[in-house]
Each structure stands twice: as structure tokens, then as C-alpha cells.
Amino acid sequence: MTTIQNANQRATGVTSEGRLQGEGIDRDYVLMSQVDDGWSFTAYDLTVTPTGAADVFFVLQNTSDYPVMLEELRFYDAHAGEFIHVQVGANYTITGGTTLEPVNRTAGSANLASSRCTIEAGANITGDSSSTIMQIVAANNTETLVSFRKAPIILGKGQCVNLEASGGASAIRYELDFTFLKASDFTDD
Image: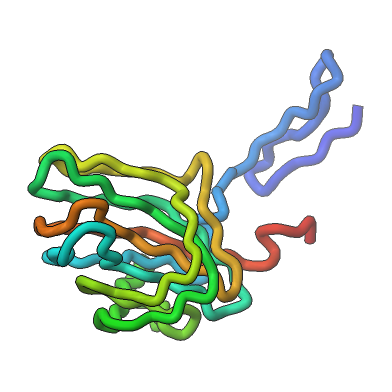
């Protein structure tokens, strides 16, 4: 049997069942983009009050050639019975809101999300042409966490995600974590 030693002088070989035996480090693509490249961000607003039913209060539109993967959404709504619609679409013409610069989750990185996407936050954002609801999340007077890691939402160039309050009129606090993926994340090179 041929064996190869890794940097720790541990042998890599084949088991008696014919399976590869070795030692390695497994890092997921989110961690790689965050640690290696500094393209992972958190967008948040601590106090937004939608103006009524079907009010869009957050829009992220990817303007780069790098896909954006949504990771997690955390939010709190003081009104039980509110639902947040996570919607995706394309060709969003953003009207209203305030430009938001997310926080880079790699401390010390000079990368800015605004160099690859447009983000608007605030009540009564309009311009949706044909978004599709991807997920409906209930708010029950508690903090709610939605993880997209097992079934990620990925936005290509020109696509956007928006957050819409189904009822509106109560204060919402939210955080959305997202990462720009590298082209090599989708190839064998």
C-alpha cells in the first residue's frame, strides 16, 4: 500500500474496506469568503416601523458579478401576529428608504458591500416589479432566527431580496447576514 504523509506527518492511505483514510480540514464556503476574502456582511436596522400592510422596509440588490448568498435573518417585532415576507425578484427600481452600508464581519477589512450591491432601508420603499415570496416568517413577540444555510437563497447580478411586513404599523428590529461568493465556489478549480 502506498502512503502519503501530510504536513503533520500523519499517513494517508486506504482502509481494508478500500476507503480513503486521511486527515483534513473542512471549511464551508461562507467561512472561506468571510475569513479569506472579507466579503461577508451584516445589514441591520434597530428601529424601523412599516407604514402599513405590504410595506417593504429593506431591499438588497446585487449589482456585481459575484453571487450573494443570504445566510441568516434575525428579527424582532413587538406585535404578535405579524408576518415578514422574504421575497426575491429582479429589476427592482428602488424608491424611498435610506442607503444602508452593512458591517463587514471580517474585522479590519476595508471591503464595502456598497461596491457590489445597493441596499436601502426604511419604511415605504417602493419599486417592486414582480417579486416572489420565498419564505414567510411569523413574529411572535420574540426574537426570530431564520437560517438559510441548508437551503440558501442566492442572488445573481441584478437580482434582489426584499423584506416586507404583512401587517405593518409596529416597530421591527432586524439583522440580515449575507456573503458574496467567489466564482471558484462553483467550479472544480
